[in-house]
Length: 197
Image 1 (cartoon, rainbow, N blue to C red):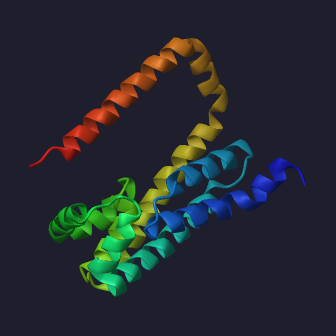
Image 2 (cartoon, rainbow, N blue to C red; image 1 turned 45 degrees about the vertical axis):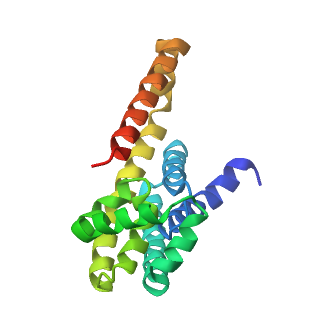
Image 3 (cartoon, helix red, strand yellow; image 1 turned 135 degrees about the horizontal axis):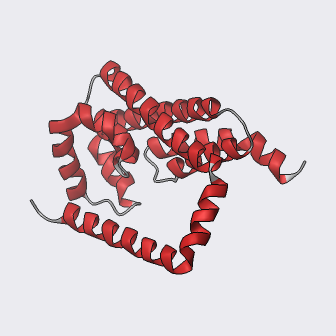
């Protein structure tokens, strides 16, 4: 079996499992795996629909696990578990306040926010959100996330020749400038988010 066949065989399951791990409450690059799997599907002329469905299934199952962990373990477990990832009790307290005000929207839109994608389900369980409501919102948000990430990866994978031409056109200096702008924007966003309100 060559490498291409191996990636064809395990790429989608690995992306689905990565989505499951990330949404169950463990920081993990599930989104990057789904993006890579959909880009690979485009490059290999495979169906992106399968990638999206596997990502959706993994994200939904992982969110259910995270919800149950938060529901059964409560805040003491989440604080103990979070300490492994340097999440302090005050971070959890702020998240609880945010979740109390914006719980439904947090579950829907949280799929697209790093951190919320990982911890949102546990917070929903911890706050005793009714499971049927959580399940509905989680499924809608998970499907939207899987479609957006899947289509984005597929578009990138379908346009590799164009991207290579753009990179050649702007050269190494242009890439460095773009990378610096991206870093400045990320640092500014981080500083704005960490500023006391």
